[in-house]
Amino acid sequence: MSPQPTDSSGKAITNDGTATPRKRFGAGRRTGAALSLVALVGIAGVGLQYADAAQAHRPKKDTVQKSLDELVRAGVAPGALVSVRDSTGRVTNYTAGVNDPRTRAKVPTDGYVRMASNTKMYTAVTVLQLVDEGKVKLDEPVETYLPGLVRGEGFDGHTITVRHLLSMTSGLPEYDLPDVSVWGKRYYEPRDMLDSAFSKPAHAPAPGGQVQYRNANYIVAGLLVQKVTGRPISEVITNKILKPVGLHETYWPEVGDKTVRRPHAKGYLPDPETMKWVDTTQVDPSIAWAAGQMISTPSDLNKFLVALQTGKLISPATLAEMRDSKVFLPGGDAFPDLVWHYGLGTTGYDLSCGGRAWGHGGDIDGYSSRTAITADGRAVTVVVTAATSPVPDGIFQVLDAFDAALCAGR
Image (cartoon, rainbow, N blue to C red):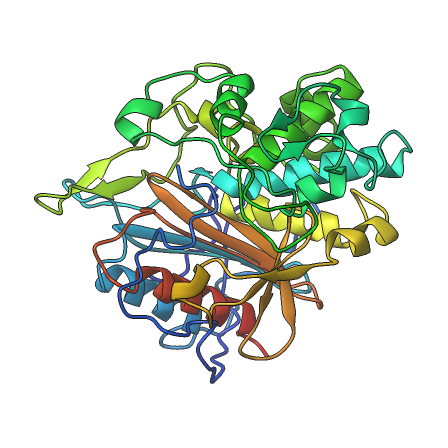
């Protein structure tokens, strides 16, 4: 399916028509990798300009569209969505595949998706806004803000700082994640996740070491925001991020809400016996909370990245702190060549065309997404409608498509 022209809601337009030769994007050793290999949850109006599709030059096959089509053709997921916002503000939305394997309905252009761990960027920004306001200090112990909360075998809130939480270097253990057939039907309170996590020993002998990706860090960070502000984190994110920069298509689901606003891309898992796609769109996302509960559209995720990079949400000095990163190996020892960089709630991706893009990613049963912005302001969000794939190297195919979209036009 080609990039779609402007519709009545003013979305999605034309492509830039450029194909760039590229190398593998952090692929390293690919054999045997599942789409959920680097799952980042494990359960992931800023001056827009719209080009006129009738006037735009259209190549036979846009490089971004081609990579999306290849993802679906390979069986990585039933459908895929991409939104690209170039440095001038021009937006192009792409789709491939189907929204329903049975009816063959099309994937909605720029449809709503569960953004999963991309939520961590928003949680981190609310903390960093409190830093800018002088209400929180990054190197202050968590104990100062949440006395008595963080206690367990080998870890203590007196030695773990706010920076350790946001950078995933606290050493906190992770909470248990049951099958989606269990967690998707149940409502969880933040304390439920921490009770599970804190029943286990620390993952590191002391905080401040290597990046160890644990959702529990962001459950604590969410509670910190609520304690300091005296308001629910959903309200804080809405009032301090979503409303000020016009992110009208991003929201925090209400308590008990299992639905996704329409038009939405449906999410799927492969049945382990038949390998047919099973719809997992409607779930209660509360088990992810401040680590991964939110819903958005690809283009709204890009708008957030632009607002963040251009100083509309935090100060330039605080953004520099946010991007001060350590090496992160999402594939662990099995994939040592897959190297990313983790800051304070943001991931740095080194591109095949040079430079580093900053964003995040998110995986929840039904959706896998990657989002980032380059130094020159090109923002890209890629979503596939399955977080687990029958294709062995599915995650690397998604990363290749992500890299291609970020590098197109260079």
